[in-house]
Length: 544
Image (cartoon, rainbow, N blue to C red; front, top):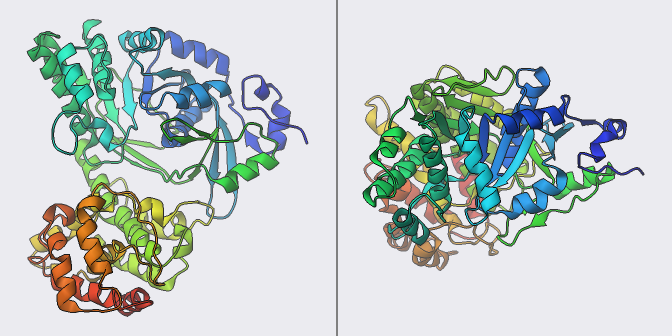
């Protein structure tokens, strides 16, 4: 069997790749790289899977359509080995495997990345190149997928992260923190003539642009205060004619590279498929696997202009519409359904989200939470229809058996998600005199299910491992007290054990007692602690 090598040299044998069903870049990549380096227009921070599967893949579509002649530059600032051990050995090429619900797959070699950079202020050459890029008048935007915590300047105790505190004192010359380095690059753009730019967070968090702006403002204020930058830098950041921080909503399921996909590529003869696990425990492979469906809705605020993006899956609109789309997705049409499946999937022993959709009770639960309880309070954003969005989620996206997504992955950080994913719907019901928040039977069951999940005892009576969550330590006493009640179904004892957590409005987003849900949650939780099979019995009772 002939072998395929993911490199510039390897792609010269186009016939061999195409014989195995791969779509190769259909543009002059050498010319694209030269044009991009000469006049960069887009740099992206965060070299992870979502970037390769979405941003880079869509830029390739534009290049192939002839609507762009330049590509994208990627910079990695958290784990430099992603670039040094994965990107550069493959000449910044990667393979995107799109997993469709009908069982078919598309294999695309993505070649739109013109250059990979390392955001390391200790490396003069690497950092110097990024300074050059940010001083380029042609640069129109910088986008980000660095996760919500990437914008945080403080630790859990509310105090400044040590590297951030040091950077604020030392100024923009050689910062150590990730966000400090971004602020330093923006300062270089200011010093080059107050050049305009859009700083666009595409992370999956609410009002993401505000989080990025707050971080940039904090650095500008600190540097001005400490005499490390002039007051004009702060004014530059706050002038929308110079710098904008658009809101965006991103949606594309991109799980960790899966062994089954790796095997498909191996059978095709693709070499060097072994994933790299970096010293920072990042798992990165020369391929990414993702679903076909994707949405990226962006506030159209680009002071240095932007390409038209005629074929990419981007929606450009006003801020209010972005907000409505984000709330539609996060509060009703996707994320609450995912969390419902995650909690009960872990309890019922599932290891694939798609398999849960074959479970009549779980399907009925997410239909109840989405269609019956969520849709009545959704504000239609206009550019995407909420019911059609849920239809796609429940009929195409989540049931896709070829998407290797797990309830265990989605259950990560659930304590941080409940307030938005369910609390907003509860509050909307409370605010509407025509609606009764106490009627939210499906949401109440999921809240109770999460408390039951914290016991780490499955419905089969066996222990399982909880997914990572920043509140696990503080929740441990309640979790232990509830676990000790497994098999007893003592309503008064359950109420006493759960009381400290149920009172946490920051977890649930609202006062559950005032919403008329607390007693129902306790009833459901007590029932689900009765012993093996009790979770299934209560689930079936509520949705059957």
